[in-house]
Image 1 (spheres, rainbow over the protein chains, first blue to last red):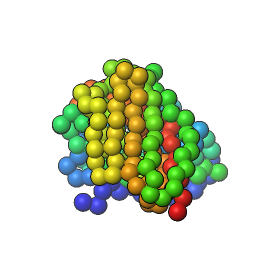
Image 2 (image 1 turned 135 degrees about the vertical axis):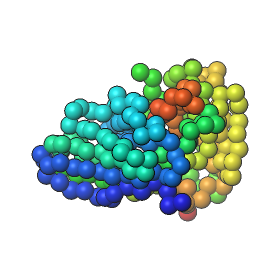
Image 3 (image 1 turned 90 degrees about the vertical axis):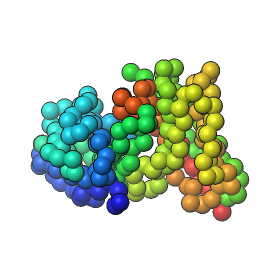
Image 4 (image 1 turned 60 degrees about the vertical axis):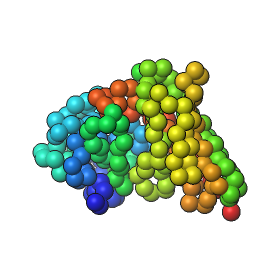
Length: 115
Length: 114
């Protein structure tokens, strides 16, 4: 398997623009997670899905952020409008159900710079 | 909310030495713990996990120790190699089968000197 695939790897945009980050989870995984990583705050969970349904979005910073999972093989994280403080690395991860474990497999991330 | 109280220290070791990375967790109800390695420019990579009913678990060159009495977790890396240079994160979980929110530490940077 190719692992979790994220696109784009890098995104540079101007304040006020819409940004869409994309993720393809590992085939067969039931859970999908969106994280944000910054030096100041470390790794923060934004939202996670189970079987395409959002389970916990308490980490989504504000209404400017939205996430969707239209099917088992694709998810998007959208920021509209973007602000400089959104600059961070955004990771997508996926995990299998069962076994009482929570091993999350991460993509390579999208580095977002909002100017 | 609970958080894994790990500030980002740096550990510097000589190649071939053993490394010990420590982590304190705050939720005594956490029953599952996991270590990740993150190399520069990459996403976190799973290393090893342990359930709260165990004190020790070994993998290839790595050992995780869990001390529930003092809420402490450690990752031991044997014969540290330059490729081990990375940031290491511990994370805790309560009811991992149903609750998928990992609580992450801030990481420890490991530098391996040749």
